[in-house]
Length: 469
Ligand code: ATP
Ligand code: MG
Ligand code: MG
Ligand code: MG
Image (cartoon, rainbow, N blue to C red; front, side, top):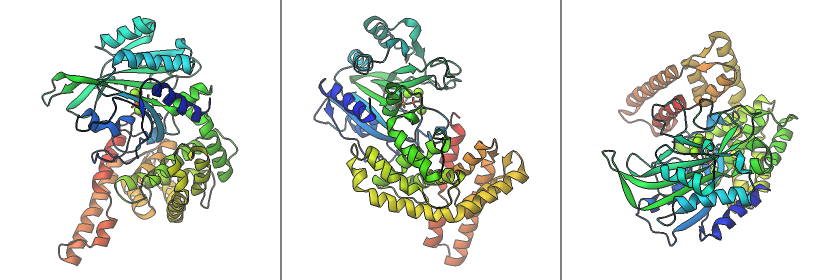
């Protein structure tokens, strides 16, 4: 089954069960300044869950474009390392706004997976929130899943594992337990079942998360039942496609085959399983859709995330031996692959190509010098790249610090992040002092615009320290 057919089969299934099909919203959340990117299907429905917006329906389904690079969810550092993570991906979702609840949500998810998509039930393992006896009983008694494949998972605060089966929008407000469905790709792949110490492997891959919003959390932490419980589900299209196309990695599905082949041609790489080709194929999707949704490379906020992703892709091209521009040429094959599902991508093709080419040429001038500096720093400093060198790469050669950290990681090195931040702060102080001196207390606009993105980098640095890998 082709990826495009899976999209339609999913929507058809829920359409015939009374769901209104809604379009994907932008990667840039329309009405949520606290969120950097749309990272799941529920983002466009946030105000519906909070009760401040009333749509004309109580059941909805969609295919939502998502980005998890920067902000609350950041999978950028997983790309190229796991079979299942992208920065940009598509999330299939169905919702109940105060209408159906656990019984239907679980029943339909199972029916869709095992009858429409014909997944062998014995390959599926499910998790429930440890106190959610209701969901446990539905899986056991109504669906007939053997109890050894229904795993109770708590919330992971302070725990050594990563699974977390309690969802909340924020510290207060709507929240509730989740149940998740995992597919076992087979004993030949490393990794344990959810909740086990090696759950982070790629054997049991999580495909669908069903969230049951049934509580309202008060500022003092107490939970009270919501008058009208809601359902919010999300399933990764590429992960489902991998199963249905009998491959293990998302990067082996039809949609990626074409992108990876072209990346191979453009970089002169014949081994199509090469990790860098996967990263490039992932990143062209993220970058193109960000530009379609109005983000342009810049030194702060969303634009800086875009810039970081582009530069990571360019560095992978460079590693494969590319010395001219190539990345923008991936837009045409992407349009061929996804332009039908996303007409806005087709419409803006030329614009996206121009934006990428400009950024590519700009970074192309310093990439080679920066790589040389990195090699020198690595040669003389042993296991840890000093903060001042990471800063020099950032300041002089335009290497975002996560790019430097990524290169280091590939070589088994790390970066002194605290030292980097210190160097950054010192430069900020110098700039401030110079500004005072020259403009009598006023920082010149030009200088201000060159200042590093204060809050954002700190935030990202924190985020990368806290990430799983
Ligand atoms: P994982 O534990 O594998 O990182 P998750 O628990 O972070 O996944 P959810 O937040 O529950 O994922 O998102 C719902 C679904 O979206 C997941 O079950 C998965 O199918 C898909 N998904 C999540 N993150 C990614 C990603 N980075 N790339 C592709 N699909 C993803
Ligand atoms: Mg995740
Ligand atoms: Mg998970
Ligand atoms: Mg999940």
